[in-house]
Image 1 (cartoon, protein in one colour):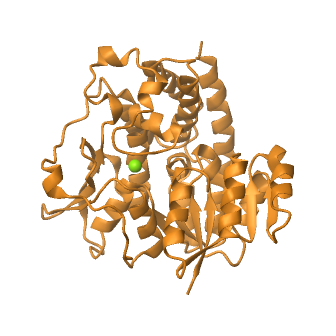
Image 2: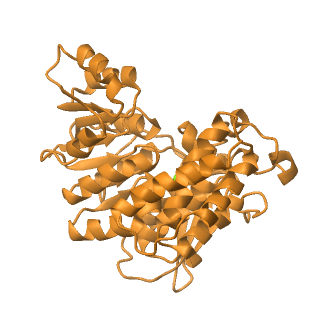
Length: 383
Ligand code: MG
């Protein structure tokens, strides 16, 4: 049976690699809907190649050029955030690949869960911001959430067959990013261009900066807490520069199970789509002889204060992880635009977390309000 996919963020890094998986497995997957933020030309090209039923562009000002360019094809063209929230609920869709960037992924992911879709989750901000609501909804609507993030896919794969066996510890690996070997002193003056040179992974700009500052790893700690029901105290971050061990689980008897492979996102994407099956692929294989050494280091908290901020945000709970995320979206963009320095990003996140109003049991509307308020606070600290 061919599975029908809806890809949110189809023109981004995860979106295009999802389409690679579809292209390689036309007998298993077909594209029902493609949604993009504003890369209209890329979306037009994808629509022509994959012939979905629907395409949707978040930026409404791009509706006309999109409609015009596809007018010779029987493809429905929609635009706007409301349209995306609606597309994900369409009855023919089996799997929603949630690969939008940032907070914008929250609402359509919630709608897809409510519609009982299988979620292949690449947008970690969704769980960072509203993990509690997302998990409750997923349980209520029997919507499976399958991780696409390489680390969480590795944990998920390590847990296969373990059923109710207790997790003693999650070992979450991190490449350490481009500044792993820098001193804190050297990191004071790094630029966005330097931060965008990730040693192992090809990713979008937002997440590459998040990796350099290691807020990405902090988000992944929070994501793991929600996906696997493990308190953050049992999640340990290890710097593993080779990016071959994608993460591991330690069990009650001391055994550690890990998933290894070449750093290629198509593998976790494909696994999320085909789970519990494994499909034949021609992705590059990790050659352990060639790699030779696998090394592990403790992250330096003085170089990566964002990691501690993420742990603090979960310990405080409520709407504070949402504040963490919103402040990060502001400083991430400001850093890329040269409006704030590297360590200022962490300082502003910390100050925003201190200043934002605390809500212990936030509703969806509280998250929306928190996100807006935290963005205003974070902006006020820039300059
Ligand atoms: Mg990751």
